[in-house]
Length: 126
Image (cartoon, rainbow, N blue to C red; front, top):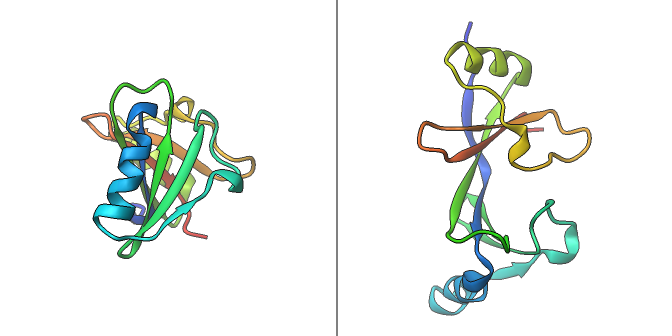
């Protein structure tokens, strides 16, 4: 039986330093959405500043990454069994790429990328 995959609740937009404030202002001032400064909440390695926007049923994370020249979009996938999902993905030529960004200690998950290089975090929905 194949593992089940479904979209997660988080999308991360990795932003270059020069566009971070402008992008935050777009969501806050132009679209009128509530933007929450998440920088004090413990941000991922390599992220210098972070904000979040409730974007319908998902949370959009705006991550400032100073060494990026352009924005990237990162997605989250939930699965019921990470080990089975990892094996299934490997059978289809998709190997973990956990070097993309350090995972929190104890999180049973893997980073993968789709054919055009968009990172996906594969994890349980706990």
